[in-house]
Image (tube, rainbow, N blue to C red; front, top):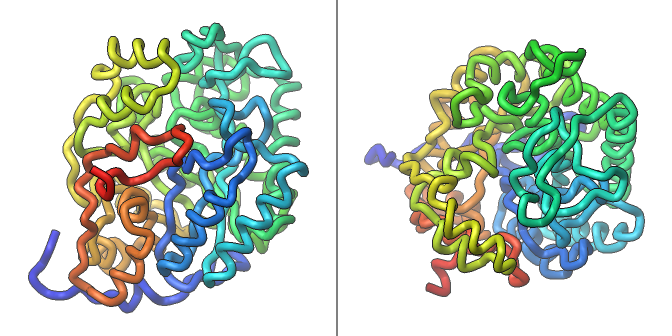
Length: 403
């Protein structure tokens, strides 16, 4: 996307305020599952990873998938929020603050999509009874629909998890409403087939996400920024489309959200709608430890991981529609890999922050490189080999450095 002239990066590196938090610039580390919590405990390596992003100049780094309960996890080495890991979480927030950065925790729940047998119920539960895409080979092939008692327990989990994170120094919270996880399962017409007040119209399908937002707000107050991560589209027929996503963002704005990060795709159906670039299936197969899952990936993986070409700012046209419709701060995500593209998203397109994933996996000093070189372009070549490292003991990482 080079224009031939150096972009104006001044606004990119201006401080920006979200609720009671002032960020030193407009660059955010996107939530990319780090795989550095063995046994569910945040490790020193996880603290070092996010400290490195802060040291590299990024204003806000996001700790991915802070499961709100033990049943909210998709697999065993994800952390779930409980007081027993408060010390490790404090170490993590302190490490980021030591380098002048701010830290967000991503509150998440898997719903009907998990490899783990739930503790509280016989089967995992989501918006509607359905196949558990992730649990067929784990002996839990089906998921049930949530009921009213489940809703109340879930909201209590969100509130408790939020209090734990803020209590150990986290500066912001990101409520995960995208990518086919629980709240996304309620929002998407493809996975929500309910006939009660939580299904049917978009207003009804947004009822639980808005209640989760309200529960978290009441738990932490109005000075802690709350960010919603939501799909611009699910990327498959029958799923959420951009027109409804715009309306969903309006409802979030009315519900008091402090910022919205716009994304897309279902991890179980259309992962390449989010990733774009080269097909990583060979890396994913190589990185899968479970032989049954590895065999399944060989059988059907290429139907799930369908190539989707990378273009810089690939969600821009859809994100513009949200920008035109809502007045809350918007965080652009999707192919922001150069100074030129990031400056365009902030200066010309009117987004308030830019969220960066693979470019920061490749180089945690990416923000500093943008500051010192307005012509900088990330060396990340969108090979997506990093996708194959998710869940590995060494942690999610860029393989360009070791190829």
